[in-house]
Amino acid sequence: MTTSLDVQTDAPALTDTVRELVVTRVTLEAKDVISLCLQAPDREELAPWEPGAHLDLELPSGLLRQYSLCGDPSDRTSYTIAVLRNKDGRGGSAELHDHGMVGRVMRVRAMRNHFALESAPAYMFIAGGIGVTPLLSMAQSVVHEAEPWSFHYIGRERERMAFVEDIISLRPDSVAIHVREEGDVVDVDSLIAETAADASVYCCGPERLMQAVEEACARADPPRRFHMERFGAAASLPVAPEGSAGDAPFTVTLAHSGAQLSVPTDRTVLDVVRDTVPSVPFSCEEGYCGSCETRVLGGIPDHRDDILSDAEKAANDTMFICVSRSKSPDLVLDL
Image 1 (tube, one colour):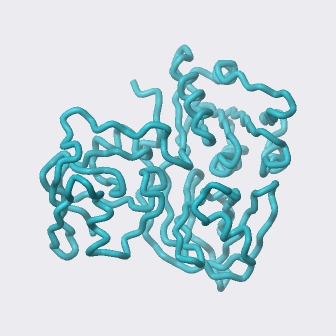
Image 2: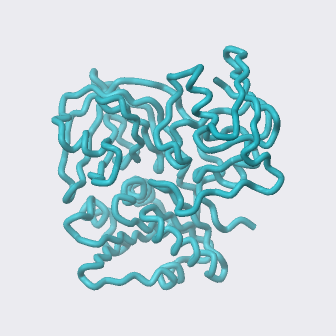
């Protein structure tokens, strides 16, 4: 029985549509956190989305970044994302914070969902910091359902916690705000013990928080079903599975052109593919953002990402070419 999952095993396939949207509103949601409202230039309805989905957004500089949708999934007139200023980042958040964005046309390159909300008898959402963004839309989607749910929002300083009032307004008696500088120390095991035995626990936030919640779900009796989404690479890199080709060289065939490319031990599939297809999307290059997701048409991938569940890895339908390699001598990719 699987009780701990990184992602939903039946997550919808990626959507590769590229379209242009206009930033119609920028709102300061908390200290160093802004939200951007994106709408179609002609204000036509946008494609539907489900809680947990994120967009690949092409910034004016050309940088590609991923942002969870945090608006109301029933609202087809706009997409809303939230951006935390990351002083130690690679410039994407600063670009959105420091430049006048209202009126700018932005290219949305894809919509993906590897953190889909499954049907469950009960839910607990545990958010840490900017990890609140995907969980907010989940809570909005279940607020009118009969299933019980609770929401625990953890932050260091209240002034840096975005969407507090939005979450509380959904159902005040189901929401708890935990602020560390106010002396509120969270006992994760006690939180998990509050859930029903068949509840699903969704968590997004700092790596240390997600690890603590995952371990608490595993210790619970019975273990609770656990789901998480990372905004960064895991603390430790994935280890090549037993029987894999490790870092041995292999060949990649691009199905659209028939090109056969050699992947040496010291280069990634992404590096090699970009020599031939420079437009292939990518961003994090660490196996957590999902931008480089590529369909596999032949061969056996050696999955090293932080996104796919065990079931999805076993299916070998898709791979993240920035970090994953090959167990077989040859791979055929839908490129």
